[in-house]
Image (tube, rainbow, N blue to C red; front, side):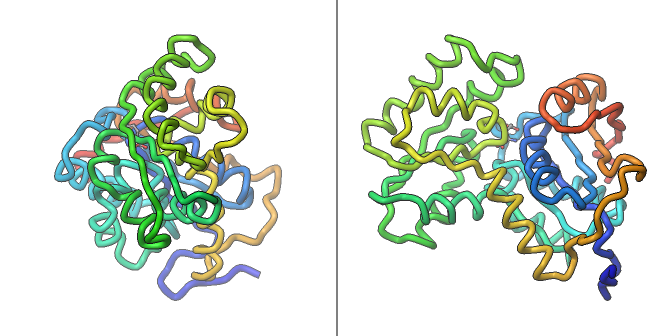
Length: 282
Ligand code: DGL
């Protein structure tokens, strides 16, 4: 039976997922895999990406506009798939969301890292803005005050992934250059704190070996989202009818074709189109 929530959205309403661009599809992918009954409205701010090199004020302004747009889509929850937006604008996102439950990617990743580390030495890699915000440090130390955290901004990895240079010796060299200082600190856990890094997971595994635990916040967020929906009585428990229309909609702020191409390369569904909207009007 469907649960009707007194706030308005029902368990059959979609989940709003947003990111600065394409990378948040790694989070959408985990939601599709782990919560197959859920509908998704995804927004990628492809006209204004990257967020990782922008100021807090700018990311806050962009995030507000995106939440306002998502709220026009009858969503029941919001997933801030972007690490940078979670790190720098989460308070603003929550404020703008009002009654709608919101989840970001940082807390779920931090919890898993704290549960998994044996020596308490945790590495974090992310965009410059995420690293400067110290959001991962704060989240980790809130759970495990004795942890030692070693953080490294890796700005070159996003363009390499978007260029499709995944299995490439240039990318291997860049990864190793960034990871060297963390490996010297004897970390036993590494948080892949940027939407794009899970796409390099096999490369990280090959380069750092089996000893280091890799934490994928995209996966952890999908798991935490399930708990959040349950808690709010918003989990969709109805099995999906294969004849139902496509349960996922994609919106972008710039050219939709490239987005659809990238989406098709990583998602388990056929993305025929993305719709372009003028996000600055929200
Ligand atoms: N989505 C961003 C993040 O996870 C990476 C791309 C960007 O800089 O906007 O931090």
